[in-house]
Amino acid sequence: MPENEWPLIPDVANLTKFINSQLTEDYSYQTLLAELIKAERNPENIEDTLSFLRSLLSVSKGGEVRGLTEENLLDLEKKICKIIVKKIDVLLPTQDTPYHHLCKWIRSIDRKTPIEIFTTNYDLLMEQSLEDLEVEYFDGFVGARRSFFDLRALEDNMIPTHWSRLWKIHGSINWYKEDTLGQKRVYRSSEIKEDASHLIYPSHLKYEESRKMPYLALIDQLNRFIRRKSSLLIMSGYSFNDGHLNDTILNALKANPTAMVLGLMFGDFEDKISDQPPKEKYPEAYRLAKNQHNLNIWTFDKAIIGTNLGHWHLFPGSEDADLDIRKFIDTVKNDDLPTKTQSFVKLGDFATFTNFLKRIIGSAAGER
Image 1 (tube, rainbow, N blue to C red):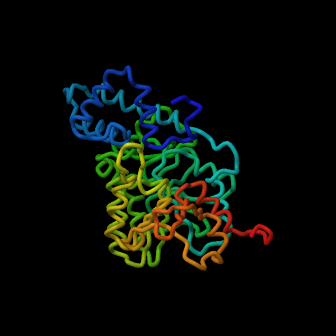
Image 2: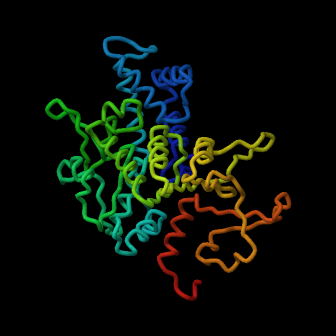
Image 3: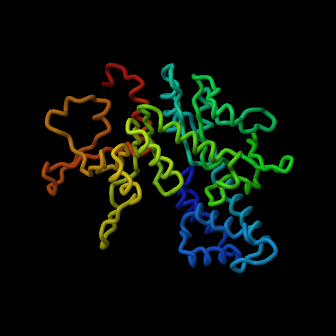
């Protein structure tokens, strides 16, 4: 794909394609991918690749594993992470982006309960937008020269209420790891380090490596958040491909029937490719939502609400409903449906969702 066709930040699938294209001539990387396929893992997901690489690294000392030495594996880990950092170390082009719209909504009122943002992204776009608009936030780290993770502040909620919370569950490109007095500790830097192999990417090792580091503390925070009475978690851009994260969400929802998790998914319910039968776009999300009443999944054309799957459509008389909501509902003719029309709710597009948040902050009378 030409460089100018890439989005500002690629998703995991496109990031994987980019990394694969950069390492086509690397014999060790091609060997790793071949072994990954033999192990029935997904070569189109860089998080799977890194997890598999680290599983080999853990048993490679003093010899070879699947044709790769410890030196080969360490070198590959550094190469992959350097490519990731280079690709996603970017800045938002303006202060009128979906990220900024979200931040404007966050700061629009004084809140008794702070907003909490959980993200699996490694980039710094959320931090940039929060700082552009001077929205106070806490990400778990304190200090200036070598910021360290403050577990006590997180677990005991020793944070000012007016500060938003930003929890980066899968790490960040400005985190780094050091051995201090025989212990591995994670720090946050004000500068991006190219050698980013220390990042806490998803990996089967993260439980062992990170028990005293951010990963488990942030997963626990997500669990505590969902278990609060009448909590609401809105998910945008998450495809339910992380089994550890899914388990945390589902277990918390089962323990707290007053909670609600709403997954806003990009695109229609199915991928429709010519000459091929339709294929579910987010099968794991659908499977979970059909069995858990307080996990709702919204795609553009359909939704699973209270375990029930159905098409979106406007009921007679709903034309007088809140215009702020109706503005984000599209209706087209569809003779195959009983209502003869098909409605689309495209809040699964992050830009559309943040435009909705921006609109409900307040509209002039003439705009309504």
